[in-house]
Image 1 (cartoon, rainbow, N blue to C red):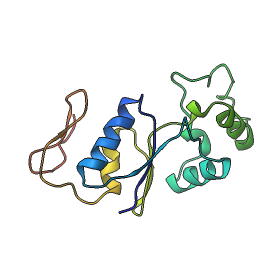
Image 2 (cartoon, rainbow, N blue to C red):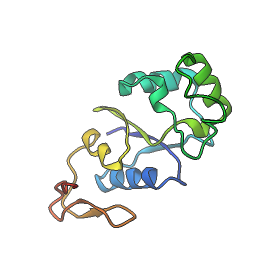
Image 3 (cartoon, rainbow, N blue to C red):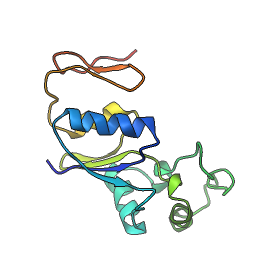
Length: 142
């Protein structure tokens, strides 16, 4: 299965998502989007394939989102793309693309909907939260 992850290794959610992909037996194509930002056309396509408005792919926390006034609903997509082009950190992560779909994987276990069934074996996030039990079944949260 061909899988692409737009990844930030400094992000715990992104690391957990990458680990889940690998746990499912898939070695993805990893794009560290801060080093190799996607083109404007690719960002538009990712938003469309996720079924989200472009604005929903932007990250607020730990970025210049507020300083740039990106919460202004009057800003057109072109202005948002200008901001992401200047500050790739504004692009939320991780975004995963597989033949089964494209998704912003927050929380990380959303990636399981885009992958083959996981093999038997427990999977826990970095913080110890259980995602899969010993049989490879999802652990219900909450």
